[in-house]
Image (cartoon, rainbow, N blue to C red; front, top):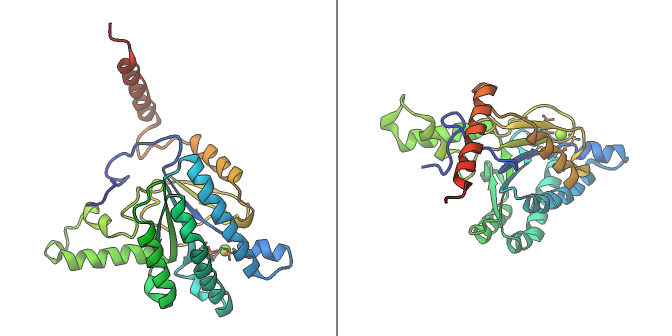
Length: 266
Ligand code: IPE
Ligand code: IPE
Ligand code: MG
């Protein structure tokens, strides 16, 4: 059984602070280019933003932070940039794992990890094992991840596990096989760098997420940029298919039941 319900099956509880924020960290290359520096300098600088986002999410009370680090299509980049990114992932993990653990962060890496060098794979497993019982923030790094790949691998696993049910699978059957079955669906999706597209990120899980796009390049994205995104999120009305009137009626019901509950019993 998956731990969380699906937004298309039941209406999730919505809180002021998003429980789960998913981010496409885009714009590193352009950040460097603007400064007449090699693209990879932008990637290096981007790691600093990752560090500050982890801190910011902890202090804002966000429970899940998911970062798109390398897409299944990023292998199409020049070989030297790909190998720089792989090395950077390795060295960043190496230097951060113990700090993440000390700060109560639980680390997950999702994607088709078989493509990685054995050393990197071993470090990922080590980091996940070390931090497995931490509960302050669940940090997911999506690496060699593609939303289509995720749905396909889940469908294949399900078919292998339950061949007798082929033709009758439900959402509830599929969800436990998705890579992020351990997390609720993202409440807020942020993409930096000005592009307004999903680029094959969490296709299934973003069904009812709120989208926030900013021109700010990833290395320039700060804790106050995150606060702005959260502020924008707080102005949204999440209807999950219902009418606006139904949403406000439900809010009023909740407020009045809180009032009744807190009324003094004489
Ligand atoms: C995002 O920055 C990082 C990765 C995709 C690995 P980019 O490298 O895509 O930066 P731009 O979009 O070229 O500026
Ligand atoms: C998406 O960014 C992937 C990551 C940030 C890891 P890209 O820069 O690869 O996306 P496109 O190619 O502009 O859509
Ligand atoms: Mg890009």
